[in-house]
Length: 321
Image (tube, rainbow, N blue to C red; front, side):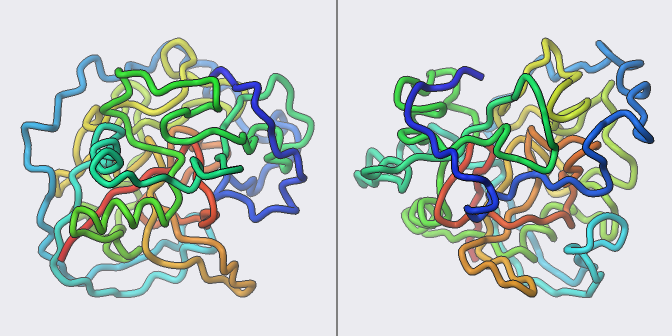
């Protein structure tokens, strides 16, 4: 990913409310040790990405979710996902896929809306894969706040959104931007419970949106990082980034990309013992989620997103009652 030469914010990540960036859990500073490098290197070249991404425009843009009671959360992975509890949601409609650049552009052209990142002095967080890693706990080695980066200029003021990106998820939008778009459509952002219920696709209690098993690199079900983050990616050509919506098989409710591609904003604030008031819950994981580092492309997974900013791996979808 090319980087703009625009000004960057080099404040230590600990002095900013961190994006919902991946968190190292159970890993030492070095990768070698107990983690099985061999498992990944043995499968180099095995990954096959979808060769054809059907155009979802011909299908209904929203899916009706009947609603019901389900087991929300998980006790198999991260502490913030527990405890498992029964939650009931009412019926709602939800976008079949992420809001795309083309869809967001129509909103902007119709209303003249200016996103937070486009306002004076604004910008957004851009992922830049480092050549060297000195400490995996220091996420500022691969996240840079770039002044002038926004949904139109994804890596900074000298970049541009190519026409080929029209069907990719819009990114670099804050929760306020997402809600403005949703309101324009007569919609809203989903609650965390609604999002998780929809992501499960009827598979109550399953670890993944497609069932209990991990994603298979030979028949991938989501756009995620396959390999050793942030050094090595098994994806074809070592490519990282978003894919067009609809490239991967839908879940049981007919929804695409409820795992991977980009994180999705929800309406819920992030609440912990420290109560980070500036954070929103995001769900779904992204193309940067790897098994060795994030593993949050699961319905129960959740992270705090900095509500004052966007990032190159966060998008959204909307719901309506």
